[in-house]
Image (cartoon, rainbow, N blue to C red; front, side):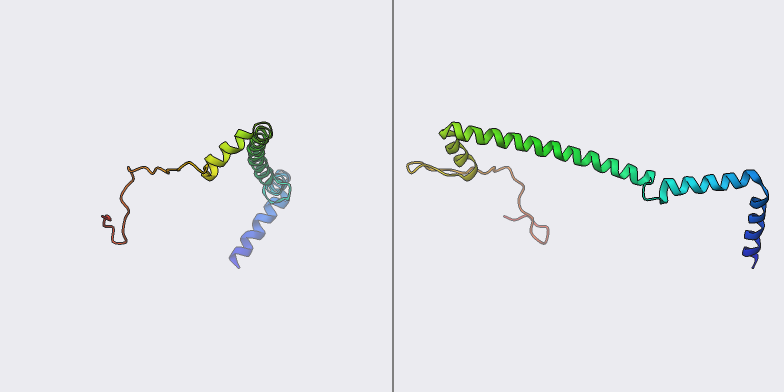
Length: 119
């Protein structure tokens, strides 16, 4: 009951004061436009950030596209390029060749379940 009386009291003070009416309306408008509206500043900033991310992603995909396009042109012009790609990517070899895959020996020892080093 006391809370309702306080609300009534403050509402009457705002209702009687011309300046407070304008202040309350302005604050409400700023809150609605800034945060609650579908086209709010908050959503505008999130959309702008998303646009920047998508622009960077587009630039990355365009660079990949140009690299792949140049590689396709090279494959069309140079038959040795196809052999080079087959050797590098797919470890293919000629009939009279052997391929050795090297591993680095400076790796940490594997850990077992009990945190003891494997031997």
